[in-house]
Amino acid sequence: MASDLHLSSYRLDFAPTDNPDSTAAWEQIFVQSNLYQQEKDKQLKQPQAAKFEKEWEVPIKERIIWLQVTATDITGNSASQMI
Image (tube, rainbow, N blue to C red; front, top):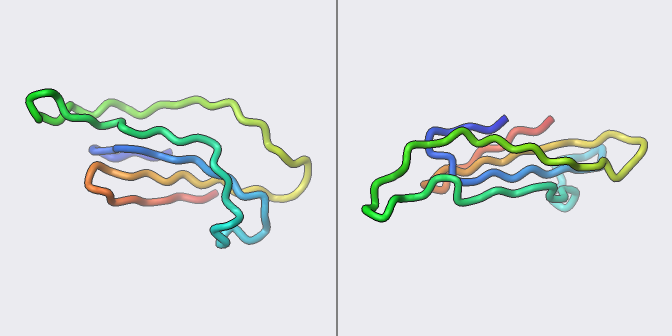
């Protein structure tokens, strides 16, 4: 789960590897951006809950896979969570 009062985008990746610390191991599953936009009068909209459902088939039958979500707010700050 990723949440932020000013959430701008998020990205979901997976790594079919025993070493998820390697940036080359990650492959993108889904990305969503422009979640928090300004109105025409430059006022920021009230945040909506970011909800997504994405069907995705695991491309391997055996081994460990890692999932990672990275969320970015409107000022460019980002945080990641890996499972």
